[in-house]
Amino acid sequence: MGEMGLRSRLQARFMGWRHNTPLPKLDEKDTAVIFQSWHEFDSSSSRWIQLSAKKSTAGSYSTQSAQDIPLALVTWNINGTDLAPDIRTSAIVTHIRDMRPVMDVIFLQEVTRTTLSVLLAMPWVREQWYSSEADATSWGHQSISTMTLLSKSRFHGLKCTPERAALGAVWRVPFPSHFGRDALCCDIFLPICTPSECKKSVPGSHARIRLVNVHLDSLAIQPSYRPRQLSIIASYLRAAGRGLVAGDFNPVLPEDDSLINENNLVDVWTELRPNDPGFTWGIDGKQAYPANRLDKVAKLGLKTHEIEVIPPGTCTYAYAAENRPEEREHKWSDHCGLKCSFGLGD
Image (cartoon, rainbow, N blue to C red; front, side, top):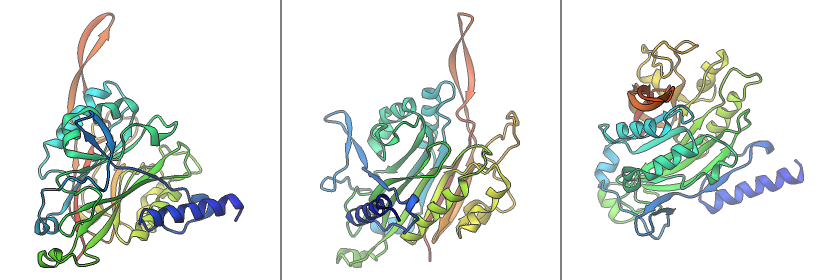
């Protein structure tokens, strides 16, 4: 190992220790870990600020319900580079807001700087969610990226208390990639004690769950980096002991079909709905390629309860045609959303 590689590995191990975050032992070229901060909207300054462990918003779930009620996650590639991104993004988030049961975790992919601004300005997002992003600083030169939102009603900020679920660290893992993609990782902590034990602050009364939001490499480019990308993700899940990865897997080559099993993960869709194709892209038959299940949830050491495809609706936007404005319809995204409920295993 070269001096630079050793330095990178030592730095990664130190940062993992500093953030109390178990990290895998990876090859020299795969050691980059870029920690960032959770953010919440501060109404007094009218801006998103870094979340502090000293100031945490109490969730509304009791200890008993926190254990009994599964976590609900929705993942959606919002296709932020397409027409009318502000209108489409607002429509997707409004639909998520109205879902029942209410969502606890939101994964978004293909978020642009424009759609990020739209998301961060929405009153519901400002009032109800912690955000992995306050701006596009963590994206570098990338024009699209990922974003994770965690519910304030379910999570008690950064401070682990005996009776509340809490946020852990949030960080990005740069991939070997043709497109500069990365994995957006975070840890959450769920109480696993009984109410009486929680009142006594029993040590080890929270279980760590690792959540990974991904947009794997697109297209059938060879060599494909998707096998290595998912291998890296799986190593991060194993380091935590339990967790899931969700997002746009872009399985467009035959070899992609077996990647989840090869990494000893469980494809939640095939586990719960083995006889349903579960297509999340191309369902209207208007695409140049056949319908495909591009968006997936894969788990390690968790119990999953339900999974469902959410077809995109349509919205109208103003279009200038030969200097004559007209209204046109457009789907919210070329991808369907995918929602899944999960919790700790037995």
